[in-house]
Length: 418
Image 1 (tube, rainbow, N blue to C red):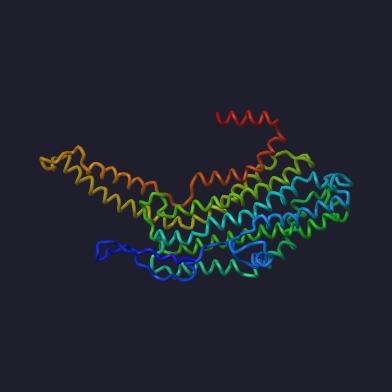
Image 2 (cartoon, rainbow, N blue to C red):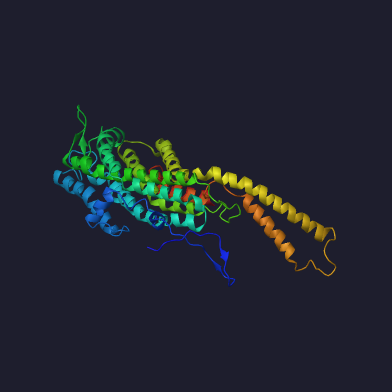
């Protein structure tokens, strides 16, 4: 892997050319940054040839996940007669939640790994290339990267996730918050002592659900690593440029990383759409009853994805205040000299205003000051926020058809747009 030198101020050479000072960087600064390439489960995938060093074999991982989580449920439900009917009021093939969870949400969790890795791998180089990290702070930046890698590769967290999934995720969250315990289903039958699991239900509870919840917890842990890394970087006195065109001092590349989490947001929308659909179709619930849950999901994902960028708000706000002061003083000097020269008669007799570069320089000064004035205090864009919200709500939107016909829905959407 090529070493990326830390860009320093260019210095003139004896022949009038410019050269960039290069310094050797530690192995952490030389590596691509990845939240995904590490941990015991990743090593297991490598040993079973379900992943390469850069997350190759995506199709193989996805098909294997579906084959382990969903296919046995279908076969067991067919064998026990719970696929289309039997004693279940909710047969397996009619369970919207289970199909959305394992045929849509689970593959998206796997696909999201590759997308996040590809979009985030150059984040360290962007900090270096844009000269945001001062030379004196390079060791601290390197330690932040090393700390992220240590957490990512740790064995203990994933072991805790396995225990948490079985003790809390399945026995408490699913049984008491998601499962239809009062209705006969393909996975369980209500009884005075509690839900009695069927044969496909046993695989569902002890294999399929734990795998899904484990992968979800791994994602939250990776997001925690990302938040911790950004927080540690924000403790460094960054060399922000108030006039940078991205209007966030040079940190604009972080906003683009938010798009990497769109598949993860869609997976969460699918996870909510499944149980809501089951309750609408088989329990008699109405979509408006879940307004709070839908709003909370959008708010939660917005906080998870964009909240980490707020750690840079103090430095960006400080850079904006300083920039307004410095560029305001510079603009004051320039406009006074322009006024004295072109308005008060200070220009020489032979100098023409037409074609003078002074006017263009005045416009450039105004534009620079306007960039500083419009500088944001966080690398968050409206387009990224709307994209995340749409990705979250898209799987839930079809449930609106339970309240009105497709024609009425199209008519209302057209009325809103036009």
